[in-house]
Image (cartoon, rainbow, N blue to C red; front, top):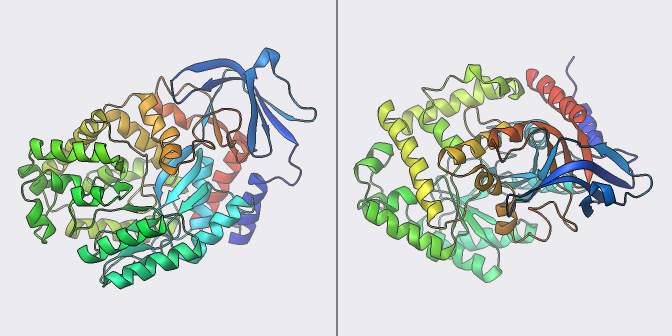
Length: 465
């Protein structure tokens, strides 16, 4: 018999927020990874009280408060909790199970923070509040609410805009409801986009997301858009056909490759670096999208956590949509384009353009919440990042992007205790981020046994949904 959603929610909540939490927590004899320098500080004790780290000292001289919960972390490594900077928790009926699956899987895989780039407003605001209060197991959330899109948007969790005034009203409403930023989608008309940008600047709320089809990447960067997702706009801006693309001419991998101009790309990259326009390329999602007909997902060991409804309804729908609109080029062309994306990312990084790790989970075939973030880090390494540089895209750099370096991105005194305890050093092999021994979420310790129980509950729930 599968647990009911309520029973599952209560079980997960209890795992995240035990009723009798100790007054303090100490991770003893642990190696601390410094994300700024790449240094590994051996044999430290990390002391946590409430939600904050209160001391990081050599284990031999550490002062541990009486009554603290002791976790022997000998031969283990601790690093800041991971951030997935592009998720969708509540996306209409396209991907059900936001609370029961998506948020739980993220936390169980060391993702202690996430930027939600488009969700139904009431559920995402409720989840953000419940996680902050310890009533729900999941990563802390930075949210946009519904995406702003054009008048014929096909997406759930979106607001359809036809006029500049529509855009201004949407920004005002969302800010009044308490969202953290505004998410832009692809079909926003050009005049609406610039009205939204102006309103966001006036109200001092960030706007982030897609470069709309009717807008040039250079113009979006100059307008102050904080991040570009999926490298949208970069492909177009690296082509002499950009004007035609903006006017609605067909585009895709083959067309981008045929018209690619390195000098145009270099000029755009220089502008993105000058404006510090962050890139969230969702490389694992991109690979799965363009090569959806060539990847055998049945061999994925993480498939057990995907609900039956995702595998039997959602993913076939996504695959059919991709087949109709996005993979019309022959497979060798699409494979070449996926390699081209990695090369673009390498050139952007060398020029100083900043990056964020994000996955678009669960809005993609076999893009499973949690594991997909670890795959994303591996894709950054495939693009030429060192393991440290890849890890920063999910730790220190999200803290910088959010303006929260006082709270996140390091294992230091005063920081919020969102941490991942690992059995091996990820600086030697970034795939070791999956070797999780425990997670500290907002100061509360989840052991490997706690995490395994969460995963078992998700698996059981998914079999019945």
